[in-house]
Length: 188
Image (cartoon, rainbow, N blue to C red; front, top):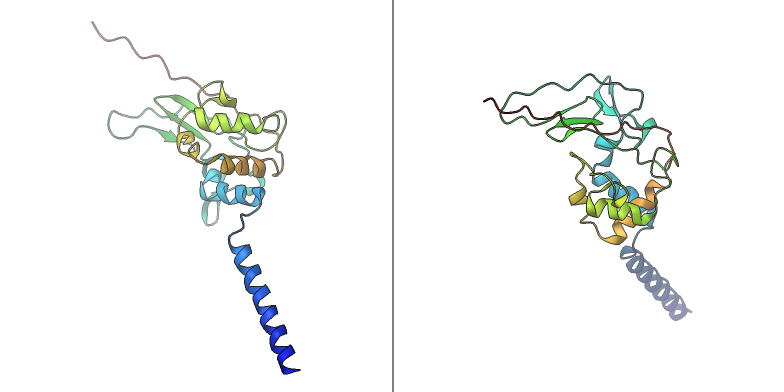
């Protein structure tokens, strides 16, 4: 009887150890992996509008990854003097101005009309790899670090896209970028 109990205990421990070892190396599901990548890549820092709270600025998670609020009209950006300061940003962290003009963070929710709901996985991957909207359109402007995000593996970019397709769609038509003002002609 003791021998049977001992064999049973060793078998149970062996199966448990095998299961732990197997699960430790198993990849997380694509959506969970995408959520993790969106978190560590700081996508919320710019694509989720910020609001002022009693503890200071914080992302407005009710507008998760919805981009620059369409109803927020901004005054012209301040003119910076020559020197080391090269760009300015709105307190919402969703609008940026610099030598490239004015850029607004995109709506990454799966809204079919104003977000990435109509995008294919291939559109998303190509946009991150080429720096072109939908993979072949206008330039994706600073401060979006598409060149760094584009270094993710295909599997990671697919996971990010899979996660983005699961979040709440938010109808938010982000303004188009504004090109830089024409340079003044040099004085004669």
